[in-house]
Amino acid sequence: MIRAVLWDLDNTLLDFDVAEWEALCTDFREFGLGEFTEDMLKDYMVINRRRWQALERGEMEKQEVLEGRFREFFGFLGKDTSIAAAFNDRYQELLGETICFRDDSYELLKSYQRKVLQCMASNGTKKAQTGKLKNSGFDKIFDLCFISEEIGAEKPSIDFFTPCFEEIDKWLMEREKDLPYSGGKYLGNIKKDEMIIIGDSLTSDIRGGNNAGIKCCWYNPKNLPLNQDLRIDYEIKSLQEVKDILQIF
Image 1 (cartoon, rainbow, N blue to C red):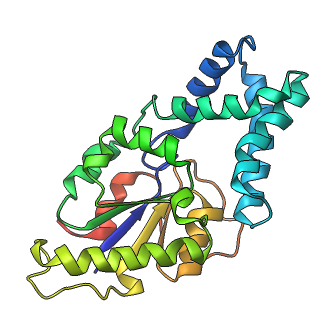
Image 2 (image 1 turned 180 degrees about the horizontal axis):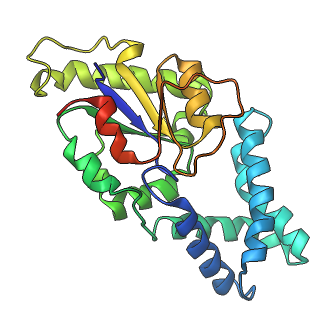
């Protein structure tokens, strides 16, 4: 039985690509950098992806990912690289202003309130994720929110998950007796096979779940190939398929 779900946020519950495009277009306009184009986005994504992957491998600090990607990108475009820090600060704010739900994710999570412990587990920045949670209404749904910037470690590191498990066990110890499924018999001491992580990223969500020893559900709406040696317990194309996995109703 699943007692706790760790949800990834970006490109799982929310469409990050839509928010990213709007944020970059607005940021370019506000900083007087001209029009942000689709060709620019392609070049930026190559730089951004490379740096995030380095972070996940423990080869780069997060601030160097966040600011360094824009320094590198602006250098590639021949623009002023000294604005990278300020540009990134504004970008983090803008990311939280555009909300686009994936697969009716808000209604899905709302339907699970008080039926299972729901947690957000994200590598996003505190500033960006706080805005997304507030503007999406997820802040009223999640029981616990885990942000790597606050924890001090990134998915897929076990150092991200260990404090999460401690908080989950504490939450369950204090509140689980009131949940409908418990019948008063469950009080903390959660087992690894009673937790599941649901996310789109093989390198952070699924590898992280593997490292932590919990169940893993790969959200794969684009039907991407599995090109890594990873344990995947479930693969779904739509978030609505989660209902068949959790089997709470």
